[in-house]
Amino acid sequence: MDSISTINKIAEKAAPGRQPAFIAAHVLKAVEIIASGLGVGRQQLAKELGLGEGTTRTIVKRFRDEGLIEVTRRGMTLTDRSNTLLNDIRKRISSTELSQAGITVGACDYAVLVKGVTSHVKSGVEQRDSALMAGAKGATTLVYRGNQFHVPGVEVEPSVLLVKELISRLKPEEGDIVIIGTANSILKAELGAKAAALEMLERVTSICSINL
Image (cartoon, rainbow, N blue to C red; front, side):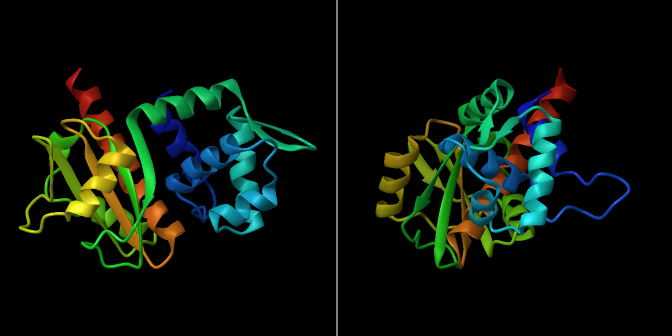
């Protein structure tokens, strides 16, 4: 199963029942948190995700059902399957917290680079809407073409300082895009940017599957 499909499957509601209080971006961040340390506990995971313990318990159960984590008294660790999933994701996206971007509306900004999808970007509205649904205040999409960043459909150009920061931290290549999520907290900005990136990857994967 494709890594994006696996993440979306975990985030889907289990029928019958209410919609889970978490989204695909939470699932991705949870995998990253567990990968970052030895024996992450459920309370720590809940705190870093900004979710209640009950919701986090649901995520952990779904991870176990999918064979993505092992849980011991020392905490949670990733299985080989989830390491493969994470490595696949990291080939397709990378991310970083930013200094204030200057072209966004929130106090905190977080950037996610998505590899090779410039041709699938229209006006950036889709990415903004995905970020809004994830709880961010919005998102700005930059395409990297001709060794320069451009904002689709508008005259605004990113500042020299922002461009330097993006190039230094994310190392974009021709055809990549950067989605900058913005919010009043860095967590919401991150979740917004990652939600938009995951939606983009899902859409590109679907288009590629249809064209095969």
